[in-house]
Image 1 (tube, helix red, strand yellow):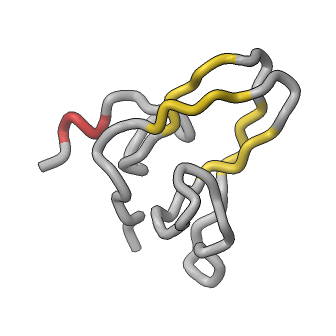
Image 2: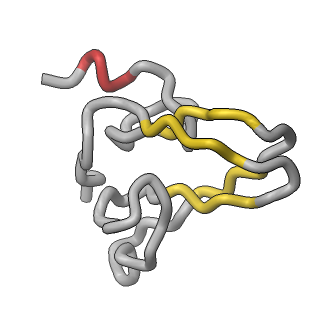
Length: 79
């Protein structure tokens, strides 16, 4: 099963140093780019991201990144 593609661009998200974030890997979450438990029973699991600095990061929106959970530009190759 392939992940759904909620959007073909990254999610620019402010993160806080010392906090953990759980990126949705299945594409079904209503709380993109974060997990809301919609993956249950699908074989997908969320990917933990630990913020070391307070800054803006770019979480993958197409779920195709080779650098999950962050965007690597893979969305540019999607039709």
